[in-house]
Image (cartoon, rainbow, N blue to C red):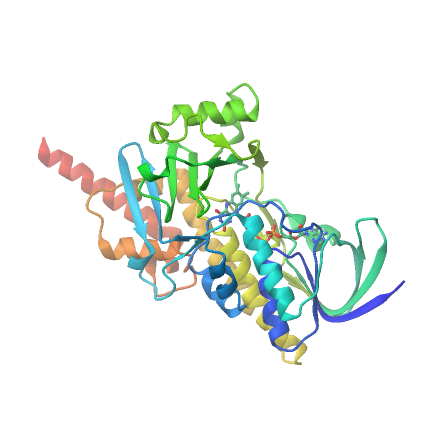
Length: 417
Ligand code: FAD
């Protein structure tokens, strides 16, 4: 069997794989990506966060993505009945990017993969990792083409960006059950002809449908809008019919959609995703590092997936370069703990969202502009800024704030009586 020799083998050509490939390639190493599917391919995860722009920029992708003319995103709007809470990234506390994009991922991911290929990184599509044997840090990976023909790739290091494929955790039994409550999404792309009636398209809108159930509205530049309901699987079980009938019924029952989405044309049959949260014991090992969704994916509510995918790859790629240059890397401190700082901050926000704590904060009257700007930074993906008390004290700060708001409202109601 032919054995090809590379410095770094990257598994997966999603945002995690391509960002890592570009940064390691720019440092002069021989890199190769193997990707199971043929691009363009559908994947969900269409609303980006400003923090991912730093990773895309370091990877040299921003110009190529800009040329595609994707919809710019300047904020996030939350809606609950007649109440609206609008976060504008321009108002955020942490210095950094204040905009990003809303992207059909098939097109976005292909743009990143084509760009890294033009830089000189070969991307082998329809090539699936079947097995990996580690010999210390070095490894030999067996990959198969679509006919099942095997070849071997010998590498000094592997970056696993295989997303929901979870290649290394599955091969080496590193997967662990997530602590997140299982949730389900029912979603579709719509031909959004009546979009002008809403103050969009330059933001994501999140609508609280009922406690624990929410809807995303993500308009793209091409007139298509992504629409998805997310909730406990039990919520969906109470409805009968096909996925399309259930989704149309849910749309008809949501007053915020009145006049816009009833009878809207669906671009494809509604899709379902369920129980997507996953985690692993360790994000690294001798000769490999896991990046992107392979590490930990929590929940779609704050659009953190692509940001965590690209930032983990940006961080890991620089550590891999140091390692290959013979330097010592403290993977636990410099990678795992660093990434968990961001993941755990989002975890607190996700938990607070489903507990209703963030409802109290988002839809409060007379919000403190400084506090709002600090929460806005988290929503922009700046979850490593420890100068932000709503990052540093993420486990307690939201509950404290919600209690203060509730108490203030009670006192005001008392006085009014
Ligand atoms: P992927 O984009 O999944 O790429 C991994 C690649 O690896 C794939 O192309 C796959 O084909 C390839 N691969 C898999 N196995 C193998 C193998 N054996 N050999 C070779 N290649 C392989 N994120 C956001 O940022 N914003 C959102 O609005 C958002 N909404 C979401 C909504 C839902 C319902 C869900 C479930 C997730 C959402 N996400 C969102 C998360 C987002 O989908 C992921 O976080 C993101 O795609 C992760 O990127 P990645 O590069 O790690 O993985």
